[in-house]
Length: 399
Ligand code: AMP
Image 1 (tube, rainbow, N blue to C red):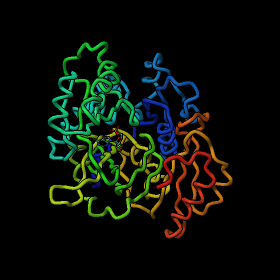
Image 2 (image 1 turned 180 degrees about the vertical axis):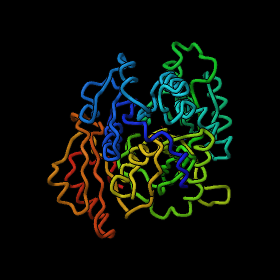
Image 3 (image 1 turned 90 degrees about the vertical axis):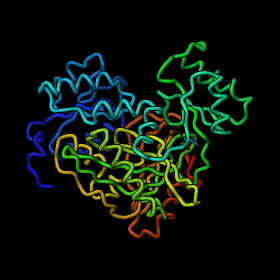
Image 4 (image 1 turned 135 degrees about the vertical axis):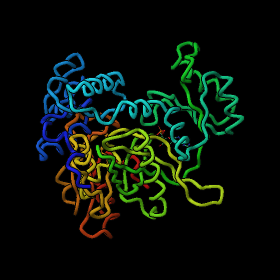
């Protein structure tokens, strides 16, 4: 599409305000600079990675942050919706150039019940689920959905936190004590929306995700389907593209496009999916959740795709044409968790790319990532074995 009117904003935007200042904000800022844009951040954590990449304002300094930027985006999905609504209002009054993604996308992504209900409304398959807000309702869910059952807080969980797998009816008390009472406070129930979601436990074969970007003109470009390997709920490794998953790509593209169009989304979105079997025993995808932002499972795109997820997000936010999302060649992205390896040992591996987040070491913390893209694709597994040898923390890399 070459309609110049579709890109009205870019000429008057100089500074992008990012809600959040973690590594995602840092990598967005690094992608914005070559395009001519500077970033400022709203972030309370001292020494957050973004400090190296632009001015960081605390949430107490919201007015100064707003004054410093022309257009806004976010890198953290637990950003308060009211802040995003305020920025949207300023934009509608003509004082700012917009906030992307829009508040409705953030709202949906912050509530698992709303999110899965929307998927089903759009004919996107999910695991069977129910809203539950008392022990009695959990019992009913066990009857209707069967055991095992995954109980999750509808709001506020991340990286597998706020979840309990109920294996037998005897687990209900412990699950309620862990999630229900913690959420509602001494068993007092929050009426609607129900604070917990009960999901049928799915015996999926693989976990995959798709990342797509939607521009201000409604144009959508999708990256390839990738496969994700988690350790205790935290992403350890992403293989891009997912091997032997071509037959699922159209289903994933249709699902994420439907969600983006419905939400009038602008920017990068991630959809996490399970690979399961349909009633005929054929592979199918079940949508688990969206992230309204750039995502860890898309870091490979910095080297592995023609245009990275970070650059494409910035292009969408400022109203520039989107870039090609094709793969350059297959890659594997590995997270650095807890402890840094020696950079020289990592870079001695053919086709390795090292990214530090400038964070202090702490057990289990995501402090960087490495992308492997050897010149000969046949060397990919070998490069991974070499990397595992030099990583101090190898958790989740054994499969
Ligand atoms: P989530 O916070 O929903 O992304 O869940 C974290 C992890 O728990 C997922 O990556 C899955 O490995 C697992 N999981 C989540 N929901 C289910 C489910 N309904 N059945 C089986 N495993 C699940």
